[in-house]
Figure (cartoon, rainbow, N blue to C red):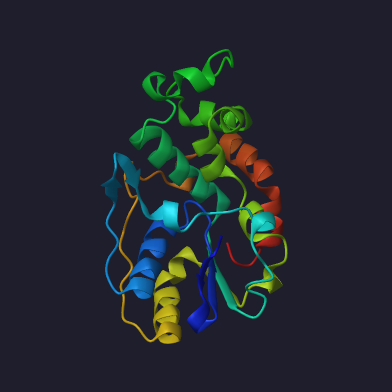
Length: 214
């Protein structure tokens, strides 16, 4: 479900690796009047994504938000994928033998892949490990293919404007925390031409649909 603030006729659609953890945390504070903190209850761990789930566009309740001001944040697809690799693979070690042995068994996919190996085998890793699939799926899977559905799509460079517009719409003054920043920064211009071509092909629909915003 999108983050929905019915009292303000506002709906935010999340896309993994576009500051969505930070944005959901901000919306929680707007909606509840206090900051969210991860917690445990009866041995179960709860964090922000348990309360604001990131759903595929086709699974959203569009009828409920037909008259809402719908917004989202988009990001260059290659930068999104580099953030996924840095945070999920290098920082969280989701493709290490310790964490992914069962999922990768029999696939022939290497543990702890290099960036080139990760990109070359991206579809295989997505099929085997749900978290990688969730974070690496094209933006069109989360936002659909009609940019006109949204009142505004913000670039990552426009997060200050995003926060200012949400603050004005909700009459609150809540900042945007910086969360899920673990992992080294990898610049697009350090990639080989081969890797760039593979990623441009994989995310071709994103580049077509969101052209002018990336």
